[in-house]
Length: 94
Image 1: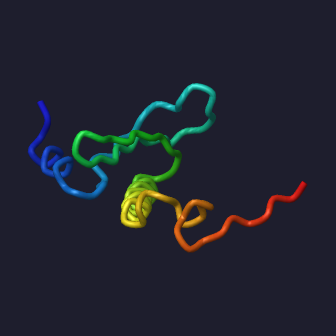
Image 2 (image 1 turned 90 degrees about the vertical axis):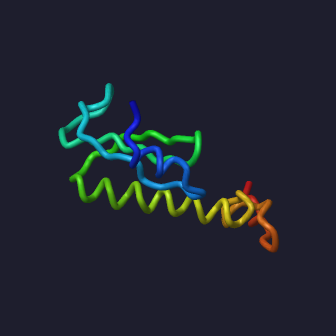
Image 3 (image 1 turned 90 degrees about the horizontal axis):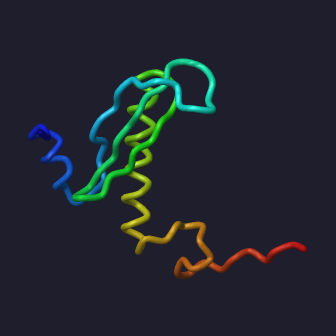
């Protein structure tokens, strides 16, 4: 059963950090101190793993959610995208 805090965050109009929890080292990766984070909005969730301290991962995932929200506010395009209005793609070098 989903907690009311998680349900509330998933119903917000912007992506927000839902949870961060300590996890096992992912296959193919080294080291300890891995965390699993969940970012969500509505029925959309993004799950990732990252190595660091709990506070580092919370900061990273919160910033990641904010970057996604900024992209959505710009019409869904990255500010670096050549399709972004008012921005021309840099010429490709051969």
